[in-house]
Length: 249
Figure 1 (cartoon, rainbow, N blue to C red):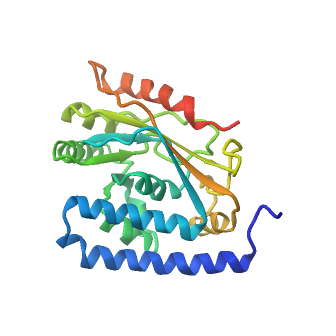
Figure 2: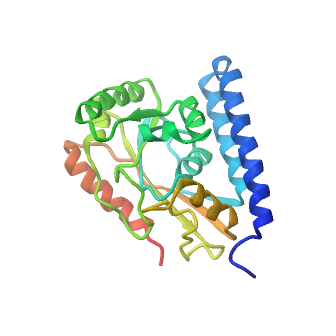
Figure 3: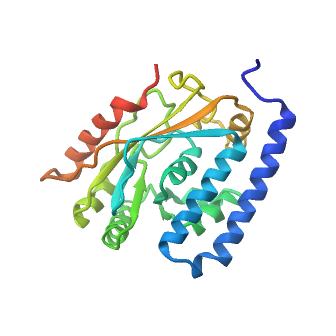
């Protein structure tokens, strides 16, 4: 069997996914203001699971998702990571401001409560740490990708520790979350969703839509508290914790 789906299947999935995005924007505009936080969270989770199903991506969750406020720290492989994490358990993401310029998706991500940061600005990082700490103290789950960019899934890039200060300021735990994309056997790495280098967003989405036997694995590691560590020491320990899980044979 071919490792990719026929073009006609991928086109059909692309059309259905586009309609689903538009529907998501409609939901944000018409329902979110009238829903409780719990209802909004359930809506986001269901919408994300439906999108994965439309795209032909299976979801496998391992470990115990956190119930209370926490900072989720995950490795970053693809634009698909946001969907996968939200399908497992919705969070409020911190994302680079460039995402706002993505066609349709930018509006969807913004409407879902994403916090946007100018990554090249140290002053904006200070602002974001304060906002994140406030959201954590208000009971939110906030998620960051401390690598700062996507990797190829074979290992971890160095972590940028600045935003971890928010968990220290809010006295909140950090939950390491390992993401992997694997084939049907559950072990062999699947490279279709990888979004690195000169690959465009459209090309990456197309490759993912054509992929067969694609499973997204979300692994929740044990929650950690600061225990006197500063953000740099904590970042190193979180890097070590995630590095045990992210690599595929």
